[in-house]
Length: 421
Image 1 (cartoon, rainbow, N blue to C red):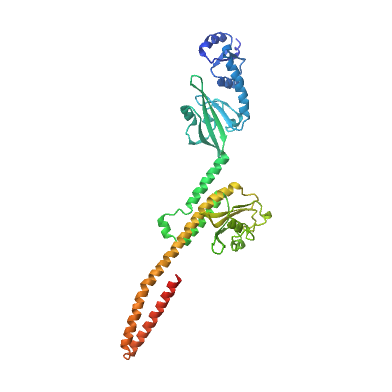
Image 2 (cartoon, rainbow, N blue to C red):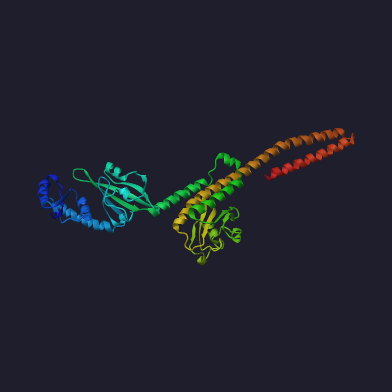
């Protein structure tokens, strides 16, 4: 006996379609479904000789037309779209979603996360499908797939007239670029926090020079690890003279490292311009930039930012690259974020140095006060004894004269030290 022709029956109301199914079953191999989305999925995956819809369900037929039209639109959009049944099995997906899956893997009929292979859910929702059904509204989460690509998955549930869940729509939008940018911002902010992150015990054990060396080491390491930069220069602005004093000259030529620069708009290179204006300067091509002065040998582009603390420029941070157009506005934002932490750390070092000098001055003043009074008493007593011994033992008189001479010398030294503090 020949195989019966296959017919797909859409029976959205099972009670009405029971008799029809029995009659059709005598002639056809009948497959019945109760949802349009499931019918479309089966029509895609299997061959049917025809589709039966009861005349009472003509509205559903019109709805099918709209679904087909919507499907054509979804196929063309850049975001990945997947329709998932209540068991989280994919019943339809557009080409963009299919591109996220393995070419050899089964997508339709497979569970959503299984179809994506080694996808890692980063949150905040551990399962947006469960959350969306519970809240009866959209739910989103961040997803990472191989090759370090990131997607935001937003799931929206669809319910029928009886409030029963029929399917869910998962929209996947790639946010790799913005996620990488945010991760880099976070890493730079964390690195900035670590610049002067020392315990009180460590601070007490380290001198100002040691702290400065540690700061320079951390800056050079962060620039290389986070931004891939080997050519770095930091200069500090001397407020009284306007000189830009080199602090860190990693990868700069000896001439550039020892070059005298002032905070001026003209004639002092990019560094002088940035220090004078307080504005960052992006140089895409050093060969055609009128104010650029060579820093690193063979540098073809550079980026310089001001180091600003409480609204005041305290120095500059310059990075260079052997490639033209190596930096863009995003790099400027990254460097300015990091520069705020560098400025704060440098200010802390300056305060520590000032505190050290102040402590030394206070100690010298205290020593002067403590020593000056006894010396005055010694001179007074020695002069009195000398008067009494006048005309007596010449050796004793000579010793008293020498004692008075040395005591007056010590008093003069103390007075000079006190005047210089």
